[in-house]
Image (cartoon, rainbow, N blue to C red; front, top):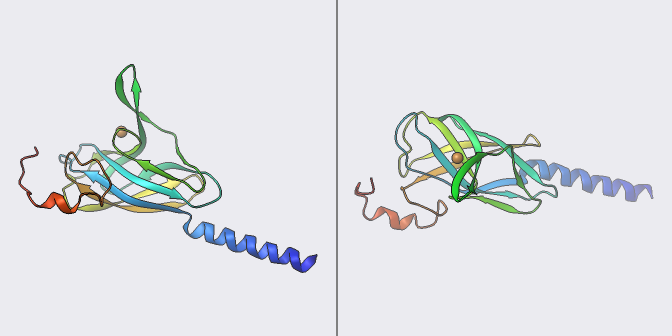
Length: 163
Ligand SMILES: [Cu+2]
């Protein structure tokens, strides 16, 4: 019995070590062009939880904004309203997508305008103490999808007519 027990203990330890290293990841982080300093912005991305337990996104921060909050968009009496979330749960083994019209990371008090083609880092903090840094691509106004979707096509006519 004893060697068998040690074997399982070693497997569990290994699994735990790997989980700590890389069980939360992000993909396709993007934001839209904004106006200048003091304005707000929103970050959208996919968060994947490869662990065996649910994880919760509890806060975020970036050097480009005074404050970042986790928000949802909900219909209240026919009107779309933003609400601050205490946390966003990422179920075990699943991916949650923050996207326009739904969940997002809200940036308050931008230190500068977010300009198309630029990128910046946002740090996401989870309830288990994990921190994941996502690189956010700034996409044109009106962009709806991920950072990679349609990125190539948006550079052909780069005049400033969208404002
Ligand atoms: Cu918001």
